[in-house]
Amino acid sequence: MPLKHQSCQNVFPLEHVSKNVRNSAVLNDTLDAMDSASKTLTGLMDGTNNNIKKLEDDEQTILRELKNVKENLVKQIDKLEEKVIKELSSIKKEKEIKFKRNKTEIGELKAKVQEIHEQVNFLKEHGSNNQLFLAMRQQEKKIQSIDVRVKEMTSTFVGAQLALTSIHDMKIDSIGSVEETPLPCAIKHIPMKLKQAQAKPDNSNPITSMQWKNQLNLPFGTDYTLTGIAITADDSLLLCNFDNNGNLYTYSSTYAFKSELPLCYPYDVAVIPNTEKAVVTLPINNSIQFIDTAKAVLGNKVSTEESCYGVCANRNNIYLGGIEKIFVLNLQGSFLNKITINNMESIFSLCVNETNQQLICRNSSTLCYVKLTGEIVYQTDVTGAAGLALDRQGNVYYSMKESDEIRRIRKDHSSSDVVLKASDKISRPCAINFSKEFTTFYVINNFKTVQIFNCN
Image (cartoon, rainbow, N blue to C red; front, side):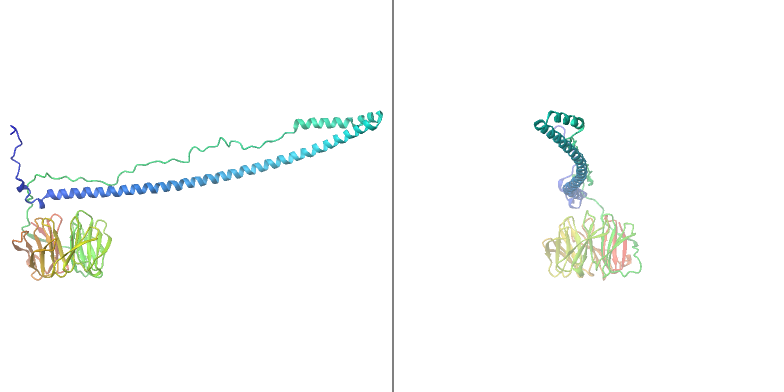
């Protein structure tokens, strides 16, 4: 054994520190870190694909621009060619006129020379010396005049050679060049700070009591049938108004009205963890509607096999409550499988407990804990169609419409107690939910009002 070794005073047994690891901040931090990295990598992959596509687009743009440059150059060359051809035609015509004039004069002089030459030869052969002498004297001035003119012509007549100048010197050094401009990455990665793996168990205090705080201020003049409530990442409230002209309402964490989206009979809503997306059930239309909670705009609409009322979601899946079954979808809304629950009728509320991999669901008379295989591990009688919520410790809260109560089932099913009752301003409760940090509890009373409670 080493003489010096690490002190064991801050070391806990593995069984002790791992006891509540499923509910620990370590697990949440680890999953958040992986979600953050996955989200960043997805963004980088999309950005890289966009960069590749942009290269193709930029190439086509440059090729089109080169084609335009080439066409413009050809047009300019055509104009220059036309100018040179006109110049050539003009010079040729001018020179032809001059050369033809010279040709005429040369012909006339040649005829005169020939005539004198014939006369002198004739007298040389057939005339007397006197006749030849007199003739030569008579033609002397003509011959001298012709000689002077021929001499002038030989000194003044100039030919012409036409050629295109500078053709070998013409060159275009460049019609442009390809320039690369680096574009900074638009994806920002926020690294998660993981807590030490060797940590004490999660000792977050359980909820011991709730006190009424106030009532959400809903606008007057609307006939409310509030059936669903969800909390976004920034603690905004999403409310479903189950009506033909219903809406999905959004209220800020300070309870100020933010927006409304028109939907046909929206029943329940769930926020997909670590995203800015929510999913709303539209049972009358046999469909679900995705929502961008940050921009308050509608996303994709997906058809369902049957009318689905309750909805919940975790990091991997969306769960829909159907008739005697729960439909399991991926986060894009594609069907994966279904969990059959016999004698359950329509499922109006759902929540998922990731600690023990169970789904909690209810209809108007029964609340069930169900394994992902469909096996029922616990059930109890309830009244009212909706109202389920989980706290941080895994305890289940549910509404009791007829008795005006909110009850809680301990995570080990060992006991059930009443946490809110009629004297706490509970009246025919239906949908319920916690704030993000479990400091606030929301209850929809009689489908008309939203009561707000502080959690202690």
